[in-house]
Length: 198
Image (cartoon, rainbow, N blue to C red; front, side):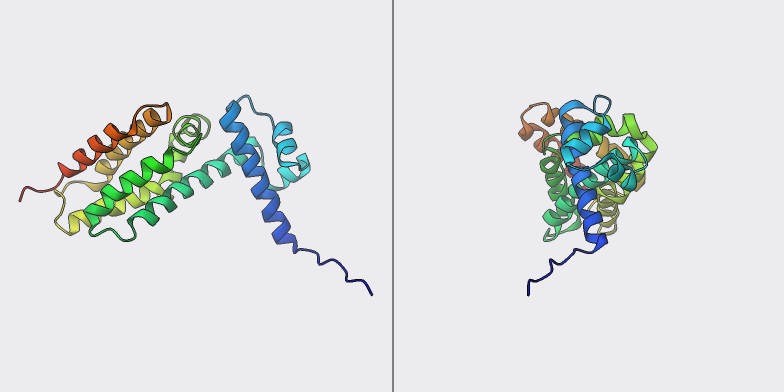
């Protein structure tokens, strides 16, 4: 008697389809940009139907948001991985900064998160996404360094916003082919200058 092939649960198949759509969309958004990418191309790249796309996502913008969320989560995971054994909160800030720049060097990531994201989703939405991921780790790290008296006390939220902007600018420059070493050095020096004089 032949074994009947085991059917995968609907949830597993649904998750796989969603992952394929996000991967296909990311590839095309990076290669062509959001505006020049059509949903027929995305489903063809994913080898799925338009019905599958609209089952998971309301429209192309919702799919783009899912791509951005996935990229932001990957950056946050890299930061958390590289700061897990940092000696102090301040060390975690410098280690996390390096991890951020290295993670943002992934092909297309700076474009998706720093150029296309704000243009398509708006600055407020991108800030919300960031605060669930990399922005959250930065803000928590600054507060912890201040609690440990290893950083000059000041309002943490504005400081996080300004440091984040500096790192974003560095990430864009590196993505455009500039040497990352000077950016790493300057940003580490900027953070170091925020420490109290001993």
